[in-house]
Image (tube, rainbow over all chains, first blue to last red; front, top):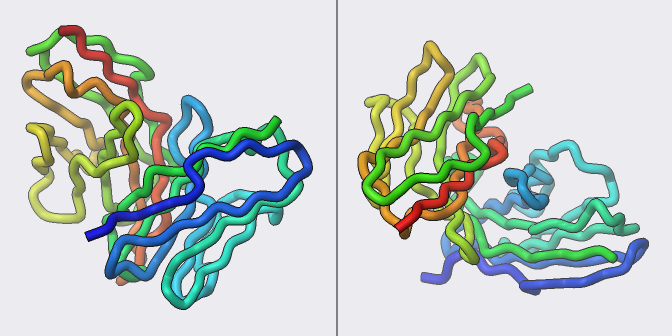
Length: 113
Length: 116
């Protein structure tokens, strides 16, 4: 049973560029959440997708956007990258909005130079 | 707004010592409580969770946590740590709204270093 997978593992971008990160949820899960984990900090919630719609959003600017596909996989897009966007981006999945236990992927390490 | 506080940034213990990591949250409603662990180079894994019922919950690898509602606390304990417990530990909470849940709010984490 495959867990949550994310790609790529590492990414280096330049300020002002755009980036797309990808996530495939655990088998049987249809709800995907994205988190940003800065160095030395706990993960911070970015947004959650269910039925291809954004259901909840954290305190992140509109430069952060997402998408969920019919097969439940998801993308996180960040435009106009800033140095402060350097972080580990985590994807988590649950079986439905009422699934209380979130399963996390290994993350994508984004470095903005 | 909800928040989670973890009292210790870095804890250093010798093997066989007892462990207690503090966690307090601020939210007046019904919550789910979690402890996650992040071993070096690995992804976040769930150690244990509390949804309802017995406030003393047992998790994997000998960890347990006690929910004290009056103190808004969910402290993590282990009677005897091992070198392999070296990791970063995160307390997290989410609010429950009827049949749904809010997003996870994490504390800043506590780094545990166990000396052999």
